[in-house]
View 1 (tube, rainbow, N blue to C red):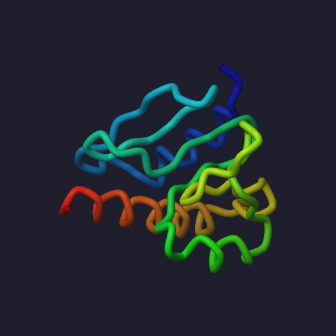
View 2 (cartoon, helix red, strand yellow):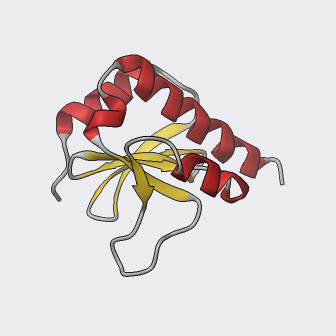
Length: 109
C-alpha cells in the first residue's frame, strides 16, 4: 500500500487521542474511522475526506479539492484534497473536523 506516511502522521497528530478512532488499510491507502465509520484518510499524497453529500458541490468548489474518483465513477460524499490544500496543520485540522463531524452524525441515525 502506497500512502504518504508523513501526511498520515500529521492527521494522527491532529486527532490526538480522539475517542473511538481507529485506522484501517482501505482503498490502497490508510483510512481513519470513528466507531467503524470512515471519515478521512490518505491515498498516495492526497488526503481523502468524507463530507455530507448535500454539501458535495460546495466543497468541490474549494481550491485544491477534486472528486474522489479512482474507479472511473466519482464517489459522492468523498473528496481528495491535494498537498497544496493541506500545507499547514490548520488546514488539516479543518478538514479532519469537517469529516469527523459528518461521520459522527451518521452514528445518530
